[in-house]
Image 1: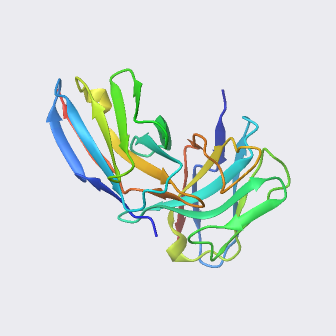
Image 2: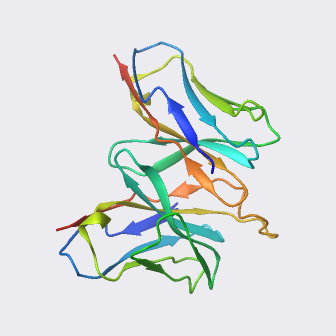
Image 3: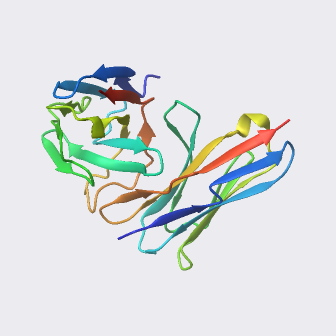
Length: 110
Length: 119
């Protein structure tokens, strides 16, 4: 059974810092990995989708990488802003299942 | 752009009552699904559908029913609500590849959620 772990569970940084969120998974036989953002009381918003054949995806200040063989993905956020404060979740798509991590709660202080 | 629309946003039920959570998407997505999100448990799949007339169980299906009569709609029914069903429910949809092998490989879009409290 696929297990997805996100470390750290919570992170607090001052504005302007570059930061890395981690996502690890136990079964490397995946189709894709998706990073989401969830604001309090809201649904999940897709940030980046990496197919299994890709190594990374970029969108603005966000860069996500995927290393299938080691079962790891990282989400890099450059020049963090208070508006980046949210919970970030990764989800791994296997053959018949989509498994979510429990998320990293990010707080960026002004 | 409506995307995925869920109603109601909030609902309070008494134990034993029934209700339906509505989900509609306007993106012509074949794949639709329902999740529940609980503190410390993360998101867990309840039921999903890969097209009209096709549904299947997810990780935590007990106490819930679904149907998919149209591509756009995927309602979730609680037949006899229990306090353990107090949760936030999310509907999500995605484009599904025509072959449907092993499910879908596309990007997943979520609704805003429905917060349900069962007393």
